[in-house]
Amino acid sequence: MTSDNPQPVFNEVIHAPIRLRICGLLDTYGTMRFDVLRDTLEISDATCSKHLKTLAEHDYIQLDKKTGDGGKAYKVTWVKLTREGKQAFQSHVAALRQIVAGQ
Image 1 (cartoon, rainbow, N blue to C red):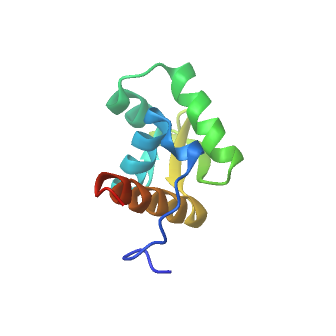
Image 2: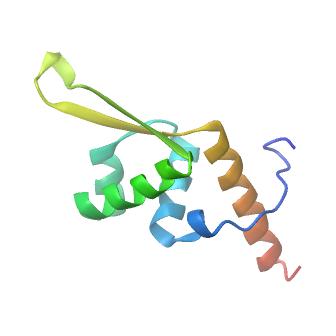
């Protein structure tokens, strides 16, 4: 099934409002920094971490920690959808479209 015409499959993991928004942002923008994702969603570090952990446990996202700009000592966490995550998100959106269409 192509991403242009995904098989509709309702996904309980992705459907939680914050996780749905995370997947939507990542599907649109690709890789995002943790702090940008958190600030865009206007949620706490703990809440963002909790939802990212759930998505990661289902192999829907990949988390990469890299050294900050200019070689600073702190690590920056980058988040992106995996291939499985992208497919699951697009299938969930297709299922939501069916629901909205009364199907």
